[in-house]
Image (cartoon, rainbow, N blue to C red; front, side, top):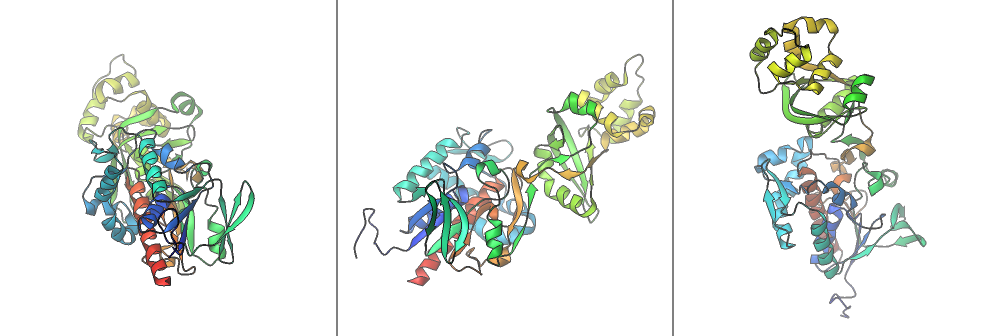
Length: 418
């Protein structure tokens, strides 16, 4: 059979990937390694834009916790993702990065980072390897949907139609539209009869009705060393410790993100939700009560709480924000509020502000290889699937794992068509 310049047969089935994030790039690599000619299309001028931005503060690739605990981070979707994580989980991801010449290490929190903490060197090495494998990149190609079985793109040169024996859609979720993840793919999939769960913000902030004083004085400041307690539907309290930031509109940050799915769902069902903050998590309720009851002499209450309980100005301001004035005159009530300050959250912030999104293509619309049941030869991967995970490396690992599975599914599909 006739060979092309990359030592592949001219009859090699042609596969495309639409979307140049981690899931799409992993699908492309998986297929290219099997000798399949892969063309990758992306709406942006370059690939991996969200990947690069996520790595600006330190590229958190994955997490080192035990497999059972790792899988549990995917909550309602852990059973669907478990087989994919077993094939390409945290250890496999670290080995893959090492193969690119990117050494990794485990931080004190258990998170896994490249030694240089940067995303750009990893992406550069990866793209070089993909090009060496024959993957062809087509930038500024925005997918519009199907025309029959062809894939239609709008490009700088006008609309183009592309035929392919197999395609992997890895178009991201609905957050960070300026980087390409705008959820525009939902309409064409639904028009084709594919079940898509509504896209919702995940790992997001929430609105709080702050006073003008708190907003003007403390917006942008971090609330350090605090614990949050959320009462789950079955009455079981869920407690997390960490930090978060006061914003002009409410709250955001790692502690809030860790609870965001529960908070978002509660607001959806009840209109608001309540989060109780422990402003002195290192002290028992009895000790806080004793400290509040100590005579303060001529000191202001703020100075007294700073000296005895260790509350900074922001924590004291939150007390004043959430409590009635008369509660400050009753030491027992004040001490109780320090250990369980009720904070009312009114709404999740808009999806385009979120780190990631929930919802997407339902798993019952896909087979085990992530092929759409209503569109044979079309596979889906990454954040456009109906799953969510907290920050800490779980999002990226899920994207890599589903990209690997979709690429493998496409390989098997193409083999069956021969």
